[in-house]
Image 1 (tube, helix red, strand yellow):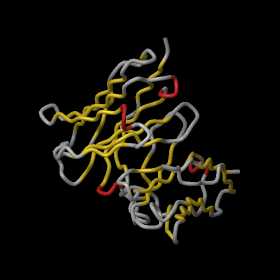
Image 2 (image 1 turned 60 degrees about the horizontal axis):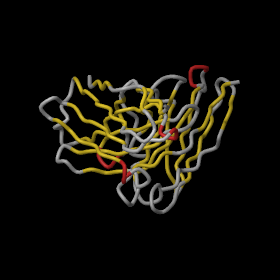
Image 3 (image 1 turned 180 degrees about the vertical axis):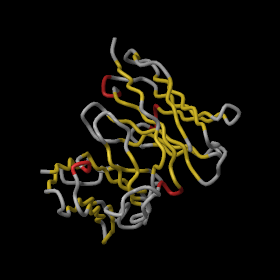
Image 4 (image 1 turned 30 degrees about the vertical axis):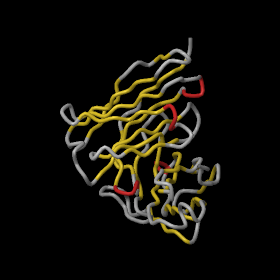
Length: 120
Length: 110
C-alpha cells in the first residue's frame, strides 16, 4: 500500500521560503503511470492544487503560484519536495502531498497533511 | 484558473438519495473525462471516491456513483447513511494541463 508522509517546518516567517518534503513508501516515484504533487487547504476553506511532477521531470504548476514555486524529485530517496518562495499569511494552510493518476483523473493516495503557518 | 462551482451545502435523510453538482467550462469538465470526487471528514485528508468521471476505486461503496453531462459533473449518493456526512469536492483536468477543484459541498444527513 502506497503511503506518503510530509515533513518540514510548521512555522515560516513572511517573505521567507516554505519547504516541505514528501517521503513515499510502498511504491516508487519512478512509476511512469502516476504523478506526484502538492495540494493545500487553508483553514476552513477548500482544496487548492499547487503543482505536480512526473518521474520524467515534467512539471505542472498552478498559474497563480508558478512564479514562486519549485517542485523537485529525488528518486534515490523516493522523495519529492515543494518550495514556495516569498510567503505571506495567505499561504497558511494544511499542505498535502499526494499521488495523482494519469491526466490528473484522480488523486488516489494522500499524505496526512502538514499545517504550515506563516507568521512572524 | 477559476474553481469549479459546487453548491455550498446539501442535505438528506437516511435512506434517501442526494446529488451534488459540479459545474465547470468547456476548458475543463466539458472537454475531458478526468473528473474526480473526494470525501473529506474534519481534520482528515480527502479520500478519492470517484475517478475518470464515473469509476469507483476498490473499496468505495457502490452507493456512490457519478456521471457527466456537458460542463456539469454529478455525484450521487444513494441509501444515505449517517457516515456519509462530510465535505465533498470535485476536481477536473484542464486544457492548460492543470488540476482545478470545486469549492466543496457540505453534506448533512438529517
